Amino acid sequence: MPERKLVRAYVDPGLCVGSAMCVSTSPQSFRMDSDGHAIYVADAVDETSLLEAAELCPVSAIQLIYEE
Amino acid sequence: MLTVNDDLLDPEIIQNPSPYYKMLREQHPCYWNERWRGWVLTRYEDVYGALHSPKMLADRITPFFKTRLNEEERERFALTYQVLHSFVVFLDPPEHTHLRRIFSRAFMPRAVATMRGVVESYVKGFFDQWEGRSSVDLNRDFAYPFPANVIASIIGAPREDVHRFHGWADALTTLLLAGVGEDQRMDRAQNALIEFKAYLRGLYEERVKNPRDDMMSWLMEVQRNDPTLTPDDVLHSCILLVNAGHETTQDLICNTLTTLLQTRDQLALLREKPQHMKTAIEEGLRFNGPLKGTMRVAGEDIVIADKQVRSGDRILLLMGAANRDPAKFDDPERFDATRYPNLHLSFSHGIHFCLGAPLARMEMEIAFNELLRRFPKMELTSSIRWDPRILGRSIVPPINLRLD
Image (cartoon, rainbow over all chains, first blue to last red; front, side, top):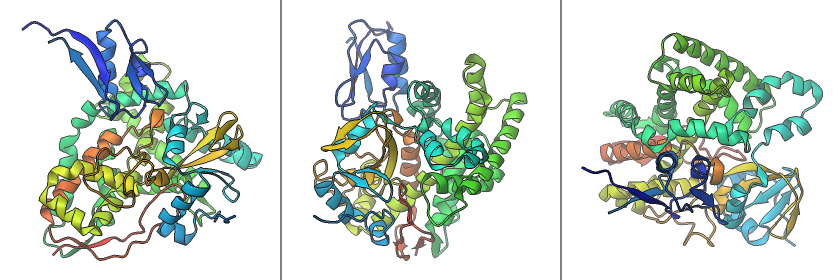
């Protein structure tokens, strides 16, 4: 089975508690918005750090979106 | 002009804080409490904003030692300072970021899921002992020993040592959560820290020789690759984990179950539809969370709700009041087991969001499902008396339940 390609991440604002763990894990992919929530901002996918950020999120708010 | 009661430990406020919180939210959202000598925030928006603000410092230990103690005391309590100052909860970036990342790995949701079996077997073991009894003390017979056993298993301490943790954790909690009527609380806390640290050092040295599958061994592994993590960091962090994972979960169990037992329609709903357990636990956190408040120190001059807060001022963030702010929650004085979304602040928010939240949520869910299923006739027979604390919200034991 071919590996699916990771295309981006999405931070669920209803779950995010603003721990900023994703920003410190993958600063090129996430930043905090003015309400204290993280948002995904990257153009290029850095797969290793995205997987790590999703795993370290204390409330599992990061969804990884794969190509269909 | 209404005069505001400055006594945060006023018996009436302790027993029922809601009317006081409502008055503060509506009339004095950023209020200088002369007796406590700090600002008090009560609106959701302001508490949330402060928890997320980089201008609000979490290190309230250094100012306390610098301004409230004299030189002789500072010297006498140097060890207490050293330990507390290394707790991730009292650190600010950039030191905070590094230590938090290390512990995040240990408590990330996937790691916590591997502890499910351990938690389930403790829950079953405790409730097996309830079978056939007509009454129990919720606190003594479950809520007190259960989280302590879980956290001991996680760090790798033998079960027969758990009773020693209780005394140490209790002494530290009295210091940190502002217990009253205890002149000796600094001495008691320091003695506990000395004993606790010596105990953990013994465990640490044993693990150096015989590593196992526990957090102490895992932290040593981290240390091998990260020279900035000192053995003291490991020991101090284990003290924090025992403390943080102990009383807060104990109080969460007691506060939530007693609230449910006094809200019969919601209890009946949960018995009939246990699929609402997750939202019911969140509602327990919102309604009577184990921490009413937390503290910050202003890192610079800042205006909050039209008041000028000066750099160095201390600020009490009352999550308990924010959690009942009608601007954020519909019908906030009602316990609604199905409330969703429920963006309460009981685990804090922002960079200090509770590391143990996934563990606490799992402990609660397993325990409450088992409790409600196995003891359908359970009734509360004690009257609820809240312990006078500024930051904590805890019921004075015993909490007697009739089971048959």
